[in-house]
Amino acid sequence: MSNAPASPRRPRLSAVWLIPLGAALIGLWLMFSYLSSQGPMITLKLEDAEGIKAGKTAIKTRNVQVGIVENVTLSKDLSHTLLSVQMQAETERMLVEDTRFWVVKPRVGREGISGLSTVLSGAYIELMPGKSGKKAREFTVEDTAPPEKTGAGLFLKLVSEPGNNINTGDPVSFRNLKVGRVVETRFDPDEKRFHHRLFVEKPYDVLVTDSSRFWKVSGLGFQLNASGFQAQLSSLEALLGGGVAFSVLDEDMRAGKPVEDGHPFRLHDNEETARRALYTQTLDYVVLVESSVRGLKAGAPVEYRGIRVGTVEQVPWRFAQQGPHGMGRNPIPVLIRLEPQRVTHQNTEQLALWETELGEMMTQGLRASLKPGNLLTGALFVDLEFHPDVPAWSGDSRYHDVPVFPSVDSGGIGKIEDQIHQLLKTLNGLPFEDMASNMNRNLDNLAGITQRLESLLSDPAVNTLPQKLADNLVALEGALAGWKQGGDGYQQLQGTLQKLDQLLNEAEPLLNTLNEQPNALIFQRQPAPDPQPRGNR
Image 1 (cartoon, rainbow, N blue to C red):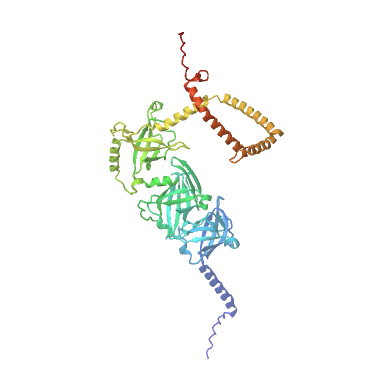
Image 2: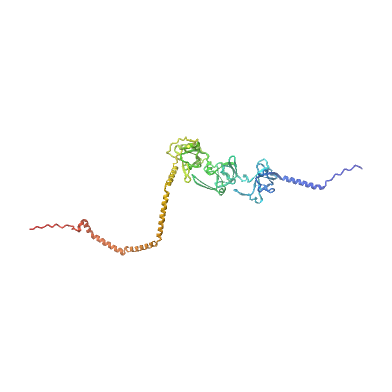
């Protein structure tokens, strides 16, 4: 039997330790599960934190929550607000450089009322995933939704000058049909121009072509020019906030080709300016006006036998550039622009052919003159007409390298002005004071006559005069009744006339005798024979 010493007994692990060990494992698993379920932490920057609450404001995309605001702080320079946002798992691929964030809350604007669902639930931040491959952790929150959230359609670029700008939310219309909106507006201080983004909804995007022209519209507009009075009334929405309209303004011209996203256009001041921009092929001439150009404005029409063929570009044009001595009695240059496409409605023109044929027409007597277009405003326009008795035209005259269009004196306007001046001069020479004094005296005399006439009419004797006149007429009627045929007076008159006729018949021989021998009443008609004395026997 061996007497070797027994080995020491190892300490046994108590089952009590299994409980904290299991709890630690469970904690580690929960921590891992929590960390694995959390996405990255990002920072959002915005102007102010109106409606944003830490621990409550959610980050959503397509109405699905993908994160929550954990903390709200101010930036170090106190210029903006910083939000610490805990994103959920599997949102890593959404967080790239061109990812967009904006605040969704109740709004009332030109686009209508939006965000009503947040009245009770509170504001939230919407996320629109980007397409860039570069990851990012800091983003700027926009105040409104980006234009890309507008829907399916066409985005266009529009450039406008200061004073002719439009605002975000203004409607875009095609022949008074609303087809889109202005979704973005910004000002470029370097170019001193406004840049806009327009959105045209489907299926109206096919209406936009490279021949389309855009212009600003107001709800109510009036225009009084050489063409007459024009009134414009647009939709109620445009009446409240203005808007943009577009169209191919010359229906006889080619409609043009469809455009793609981002195609640039220019915003014109009105429809007529946009129409002029459609005519890209033009001919410039200078008209030298001997008389006054008062009433002729830039934009006035140039007409040939009543048909508009161009536009007045500038009045005057390069006049007296060398000082007052350059004015003298020199004619006033007016720059006009002929637009053949107004007449032919073609997209392209042979300008050389037009220039040659116009030169031939000038040698045949085609001349420009100023004519009154509106007597109310005194507006003038340039009229092109043939004058066969004018001197011949050489056709080689130019003014500052621009060909001169021959003109004739528009004496009609000057004559009218002279006649009006002479009329006013005559009216000023009339003795209005003496005429007024005479008129006052005549009015005083008329007032006295009226007063005497009123006193005369108020006399009772005058009031009874109509009755007396009526009685006399009745008596006269009774007296004349006896002289009717068959009456006593008539019979007596008839007998008297018969006796008078008989008397005249009996007196007729006597009258004949007296006519032949006026002294028949004293001497005998036949003289008696002269008796012969008898002798004594």
